[in-house]
Length: 219
Ligand code: C5P
Image 1 (cartoon, rainbow, N blue to C red):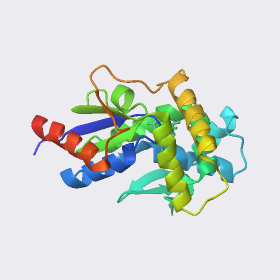
Image 2: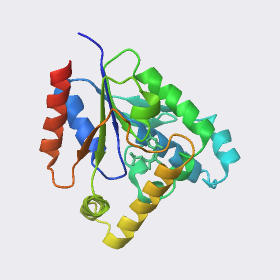
Image 3: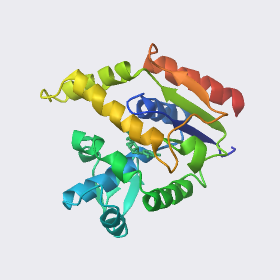
């Protein structure tokens, strides 16, 4: 059994993590959600009442922070924070944390270590380009910003939150995409050798099957 890696990048709300999770189950390999790692650090910064824009404070606190995945759950200093990191306040601040070069350097190191000795599917913004540039399979998963907004809106409504409009959500997604795509260090972009999957008019199952068939044809 050969070790292989599947790298997935794409903008916010394109369905990467939903798809990656199902792919990992079907192939029986580990899923690593790198966005969750940046989110966990953002949670710590906000809990400590630090300003995400204050680079030095963020770097300082990151030095005393432990971020880990255990059985598909994300842990911040030993506390499981799967739900906390999905709050909208995290959505709206995480890209400021992810802009910082020193933070990225350490996250990338950690992610590369996680993928070293086992087969993984890993998703994020710089996986196909920086973290696993030699991945066996590369995908760029995207969808129109309106469709991504509608998906996120539905998710938020299902959680019972009612004080936010679809237009607001779409604006927030646009803003996050803009920061992620235009930052200096490891911006979100389509790798030359990535397979682009536009999921605007696709079901989750169709996306998963399309990835599985490409991977199965290649291993
Ligand atoms: O994928 P998710 O929406 O959870 O990612 C949250 C944020 O973390 C992204 O908007 C981006 O700013 C940052 N991120 C990143 N590099 C990654 C994964 C996430 O910069 N590999």
